[in-house]
Image (cartoon, rainbow, N blue to C red; front, top):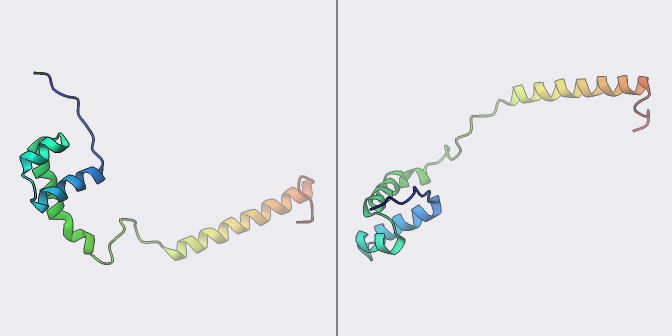
Length: 101
């Protein structure tokens, strides 16, 4: 018996199968046949969904991005503005940029 190649399922598909398993309207074996997936995989996705379901309702930490340092950003904006002004005046003196803007 040959093995089938590894398949990568989308998160939407995984959640659909796991929710169907949680509903309990069909057995895991029936779902495995319906979605052409091994029953152990359905059980694993179901347990992952149940374990991580509380994370959906957590407040405050909805994004995994690091906090933004506003002072650093303002300093960078000032630095870039200074560079732009310097380059604009230098290009104007050389004649590559018109004096009117």
